[in-house]
Image (cartoon, rainbow, N blue to C red):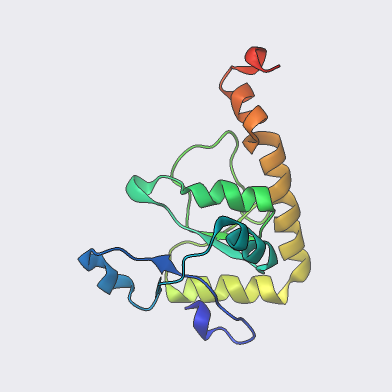
Length: 148
């Protein structure tokens, strides 16, 4: 889908394995495996990023990374609780489903509204600072007295 949006250069995809489910995502499988420092550099430069659930509808580990990097995040609905909700239009742009139309509409909206994108970026980072840092995570777990 991202590949069809004008003015957008898509780079990335899903890293496949040897399973037969690769056929379901054949147009999104990539052989490119980046070292972490290169992935971070490229993600920082990205206009936007995508978040979808991982196994058993859990939030993937990339969600936290995207928040920490202060990215404009397009996401399907979140199914699990977080310390505080990620609010559509404030911290994240939530689409109703992973349909091509929903994704294309979200990409187009964010491209056409740079102030909205900047708001998402700023608030994603603020959310991370308030709830996601290692120190804040320990505090939320009630382990703050053990931090030196």
